[in-house]
Image (cartoon, rainbow, N blue to C red):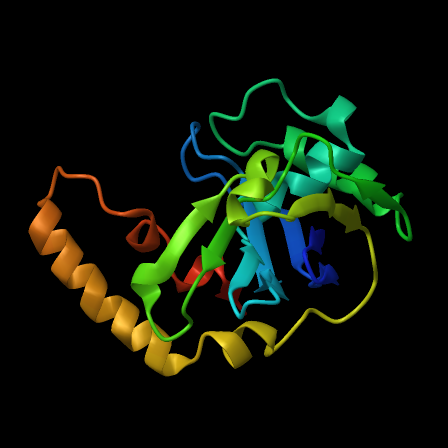
Length: 197
């Protein structure tokens, strides 16, 4: 992911492993597919000290939609064996890089990495909301055979950050109630930023 900023270009990248495999179906309506995602969100440090993350949300299907769109089922009520065929197609594209034009990752801005309440959503189509002079130059995806990224997110969002997030989440949940809408910062969890299985 590369952005243009008032101080020049900044970029960030991460290697995420997504494994699809056939699973035993104990009931007819079970998906029959097991998915494992391991890795971290890509992170960019902006010139003013804020951090922009390309979250792991939907990372299990991003490569499929970019490299194997023809094999993807038109709808995804559950992950079925159609996805295994698409995953097999993705492997054939090892070493290829493509620029995303529609299948963007979900982006989150952390304005203050000591305060989880500062997490806000940023829409890729509206990067200019970050401020004057900001523009999304490109988000690309590559199929690689490399180790997953480890430690980059934790350098920015440490254990103390997530402990504070937990305390703030409980307070926000008490305030909104069981049927209320939580602020964006608390509709995410650590697994959207980092997931090492």
